[in-house]
Each structure stands twice: as C-alpha cells, then as structure tokens.
Length: 200
Image (tube, rainbow, N blue to C red; front, side, top):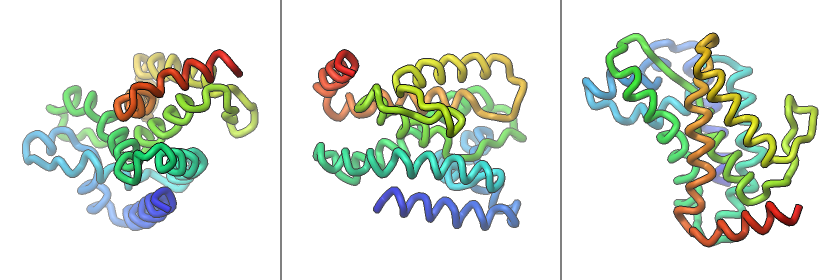
C-alpha cells in the first residue's frame, strides 16, 4: 500500500513539474540553496521530481517491482511502515549527502529523481535474496548478488568519467545504504544473508 502511494504521489508531482519549471526547480536538490537558505526539505522533495516520462517510468517501475516485496517483508519482520519509509527516504537522503558537500558552492547545480531511494530498495532486496534474478536491460536474468557487484563497480567507474548527466554517485550511495540499513535494524540478519549466499 505504501509503495503504491509513493509511486502515485511521485507520478502526480512529476507530471505537474513537467510543465511547471518554477516548481521543478523549487523541489530539486540544490546544495547551494540548502546550505545558504536552510532548504533542507530538498533532500526529500527532489525524489518526487523526474526529468521526463522515461526517467519516471524506469524509477517507479523498478521501485514497484522490488518495493512491494520489501514492504511486505518489512512488515513480516516487525519493522513496520516506519522501517520501510526509513529504507526509501533514508536511501534518498544517504544518496544525496555526497553531492551536498561536493556542490555546495555551485548555485546552478540541481539534481532530481528517486534513483538513490530506488537503489536502496533494490539492494536491500539483494541482501534478503542474493540469488534472486534481476533482469539486466529488462531481458537478461542475472543473480542479484552478481548484479550488485557489477552495478556498484559500474557506478564508481562512471562517476569518475563524468561524461553523462546521470548522478552515478547517488546510485552508488543509495545502494550501499540499502545493504546496510536492514542490518542496523537487526544485525542478526547478516546470518540470514550468509546462509542464503552459501545455499543458492
């Protein structure tokens, strides 16, 4: 239910921002304005804004695909709604901290999208089901644990290249947060992960 609510809210806000650049920039992640004007809400609001329909669809479809499973699992584990929201929005915040310091003096820098939060949810699912299949390019089934290592390496490589407009650092830090967050809630889950890893 929470997953669907987040998807719906994100879709509505993104659609509004497609034709309202004033709202788009007011909600985007702008480190300069966060520091100078204490606009800390941007840590969260930028996750509800997307550049175009493809950006929105990919993020929300991925989130829905893995978020529904994680929401149900968190409820079963007793983490509840608060725990699940901590995974999603915590991933959003964790994914943005690096850019806050890196671009704090760049007034024109803006970042948008829920990629950091979605990465957190995706990689949290890998922690619980490391050999579960993830469709690479929506076609090729790859075990989650293998996908995870390749993905993290790719994010760091592309972040150093700086040849596109994708925030690879946000993907990377969101993913790392997603792996660690459940262990902060219950460190004994590491045993479940190790068992699942060694018993595919």
